[in-house]
Image (cartoon, rainbow, N blue to C red; front, top):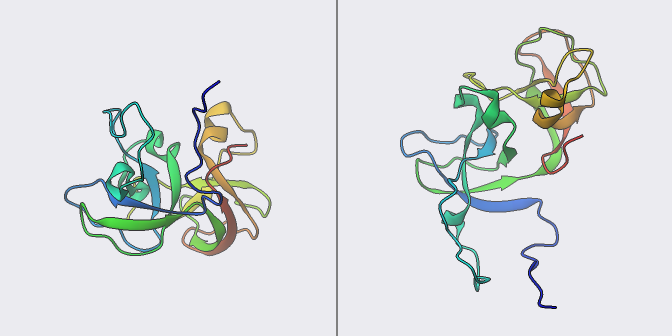
Amino acid sequence: MAQVNFLLSDAGDTMTGVNGNTTTAITAGDILYASGSTAVKLGTTVPGGLDYNDIEVESVKFATATTQGASAVGIAEEDAAAGSQIVFRGKGVYFSPVIATTCPLRAGAPVRAAEGETTSGVQRSGTTTRSVADIKLTCGVALTGSAVDSDYIVWMANFAARK
């Protein structure tokens, strides 16, 4: 049987992509979502390599719907002008501001990216009861907590695993 899945990276913690937004820059620390279209980029055979333009990302803070939050893939390691190359990380421990504290964010609670905000931050993923939609938005877990908007917390990011 022919092999069909080929290893690109054994770690996957850091990736290089392109700012898919043609007008807005990404700032280091922004939480990013995969924004590429379904148009064919790589073709039907395994490419000899990967061009950074093949992976398009944009900042969740400018998103207008939770759809983009469910597609969160990492945190920008650097600033990137519109349409330029960017490095982002899919795992790590971060300091981030708490956004929209409609429900206290306790240590151990799941967090998600806050979309449609002026600041890139996190908020509790769901309330005290969680729905399937909340689970899809989860991108990490709070290590400290706060019930005050804009206070910083420590959280562990893992964009690959949805609980």
